Image: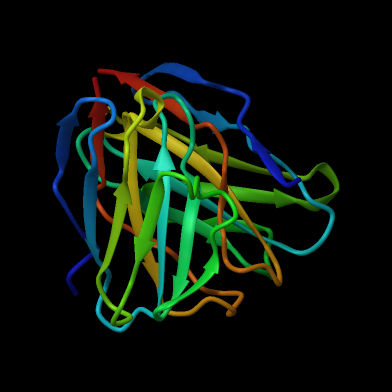
Length: 116
Length: 114
């Protein structure tokens, strides 16, 4: 079974530039998550999709971050404009469903973003 | 707000030593608990999980964790570590009934010396 795919793996940009990340979840997984992991910290949820609808985006900085999952499969996360504090690893995860107690999330390799 | 605390930020052990990594969470209701591991250069992988039943959970590679509800703890253990266990370990909690969001601890870096 193929895992969660993400691209690019690394990205270096200057502040105020824009950047986009792509995620392809495990086939058949209805729920997709984007997490931000700052160096020395655990991952923090940015946004969660159930199929193509947003379930939780309470911690997404909506003035600069946006995400979409138009067809309920792939997803993109965009930052515009980037700030120095956005330097982090952006992780995508997927799970079969949201509500099941036994639901388990599987993570992709992440995109390491450096903002100069 | 829910939170997860991992007491040890950086642990250094020699091979064959025993390991225990602490994890405490703050939530009074039913929880699902997880330990994830991130080996150098690799992505986060599920080590073990607790949903219900026997509070002693066995995971991959000889790891186990014990859920102690009265102490709000879910400590990770391994009787004898190997050099290949060098990695970062994350404890995470998901409260029952929520959207599925995982709350992670800050992680513990384990370095095993050969």
